[in-house]
Length: 391
Ligand SMILES: [Ca+2]
Image 1 (cartoon, rainbow, N blue to C red):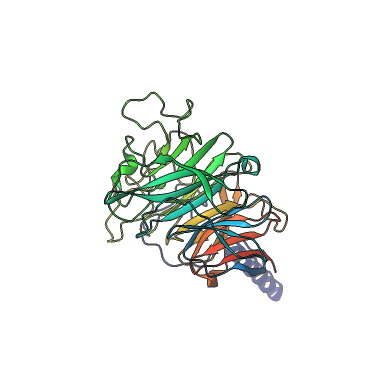
Image 2: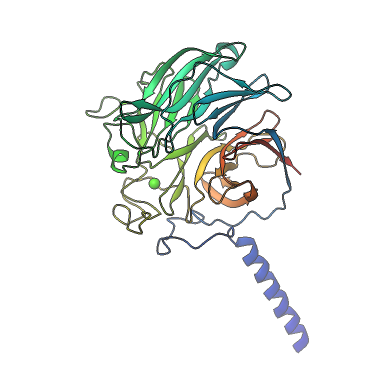
């Protein structure tokens, strides 16, 4: 009887251990701000996704100079930006082409040529969008140019700026940015230029998500149209430095990733007109250990991040997975600059259900895209364009 009881107790102990293991978070460092707690379950340190995954990486191209953004061409091949100011056409088995006619960029600090995006009708129009830090006197701004890529893909035609951030500021920090076309409109993400307060100033476009037409004009149904002393291109505000953005394939909504300070990287679901809190509230603290803003994580009228990281993953680009090679439909696949590799989040509606991290040995990953066959494309800071497939 006693022995039977002990067996039962052991089984319960084993079951509890398995339970604990199944609910354990991804291995990571101690939080910068241990006194902060999430606003809802799984807003941070969600259970580690348990399934065994083997990944194979293959190199499409190497020797790139600080690559930043990648797009898949509908006819095969890739467009890759290099932050010093080059746009490359990469086609397997062919020599890399450097596209002529690029805008002059302010290549300093985090600035330079940033994202590239294809217009939804690229196959017919050959229109592309480039975001970059634009020099204005001794200052710089985040700007977005539209251009037509010549049929032979050697030069840009009819290059013109369709967005120029205001105000122009000094320094090389926090330019964002990503460009996400969505039907007739495009979303542009920016950063606070390291100055914090511009993110809450609705007269300017630093620290915002913007929504404009491809000709630069503002849609009549933007959330702040008709308000005084407000830039009507603003779609959401209170962002620190947004370097990841994609459309959720399940809902069509824009989701973003932004860099926090020490702790407080955020995954956000973007709602029109909403305030995302920076620099009033944050799940992180300033690098010198002082509190951000009110020192609180939440405030009335501020949207909660759908997920946050402390310590940070330093997220750059991300893509929602859509494809047939992985059973990861609708998962967030994010580039991590630190600790590096990629971070996967499984969603359950607008909540995170689990987190996993892969390929940390790649070091700093700058952008993520999904290839035509469902492979995951990665750009690394050390100059490689990689394809990731099941191992
Ligand atoms: Ca926030």
